[in-house]
Length: 176
Image (tube, rainbow, N blue to C red; front, side, top):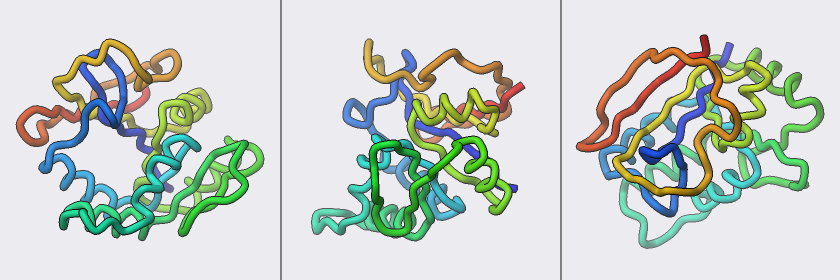
């Protein structure tokens, strides 16, 4: 059975904003390895549209960006959206009852499925479907923005922590 993992970069004050801060080269290489090891990614519409950037080659990319794009393109993606009618390569729309669709997806796969997007993660949290939360804590204070937890924080227990690069701490939590 697959494990749903919600992981995102987060500021010290709890916000996610890919435009305000991003991964160091060391953390980016970590994300490449994670993408290579995942059995797929589950996206909300907004984050999926942001990630579609990796569908097209860009001549200015360095080797790490090319490696991430290749890993991302290779894995299946599932998109939860009420407004999209089609999605890009190696992706499918999640239709019908969200809980039933995600339970079926978990049952038919083995390994980690990335969950991306705070709103989708909140819906899946309310359904009891997130197996792990990974916070990549950056030494940045934003003061506003989209919070990592889109709703009330679920009861969690710290299961692991480690440092990635010079200034990012990865905190892994499991539901209690």
